[in-house]
Length: 254
Ligand SMILES: [Zn+2]
Ligand SMILES: [Zn+2]
Image (cartoon, rainbow, N blue to C red; front, top):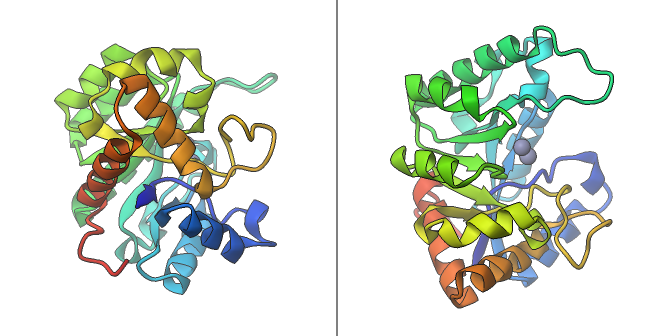
C-alpha cells in the first residue's frame, strides 16, 4: 500500500466528488491520506474529513506562510485531533506586482510559533519551504521537531542538511518533469523519502493540465524507482514505512 502524505482533499476542487476521489485512490493502492490545512477554515475541514474517514484520512492543522499577513491565531488550531502540524514554513516567492515589505518577518514569526506548537504537543511538522532555505534551517534549528520538508525544491546541500536533522523529504508529481529534481533524486536515501501529490496541484506526467489526485501516487513512486534503479515495490514498502514512522499511523485501523 501507498500513503499520500500531502493532499488537499478539503479544497473546493473536490467538492463535487470527494468520496469518489478517495475511492479511486484506494483502488490504485493508495490507502491512507494526510490532509494538511492552510488556513483557519481548511484546518477545521481536515478534522471533519478525518472524522468521516477514520483510519483512512488523517488531519494536519496549520497555517501556510501565505496566511502570515492575516496574523492567524495559532492557539485556535484544533491540534488535539490532528496527527501533525502543517502545513507551515516559509515561501519567499515573489509574484508579479506583489509587495515584499514585511512579508518575510511575518512568515518567520508564524513558522516559529507553529514549530513550538508541534514541540509542545509532541506532533511532527509538515514544512513548506520555497526560495527561503537561508532562513529555514536557522529557524528550524531553534526548535527542531521531527518532520518533513514537503514538496522539496532544494539541492543536494539541503538534502545533507535535512539528513543531519533526521528530516524527511516529500517528493511530488513534479519529479516526472522537473530536470532539477531528477538530478538530485538518485542522491536522496530512500529512508528519507515520503510520497505526496500536493493534489490538486503538481499533476504528474501524463496527466499534466488536469486536476491532480492521490490515485497518481504510483506514478511518483515509479519515477523515483526509475531514477534510483530499484523496483517500485521497494519504493512503496520503504516510503510507507517512513510515513508510518513519522506520523505513527501503524497502530491505527487501515
Ligand atoms: Zn506547500
Ligand atoms: Zn500543500
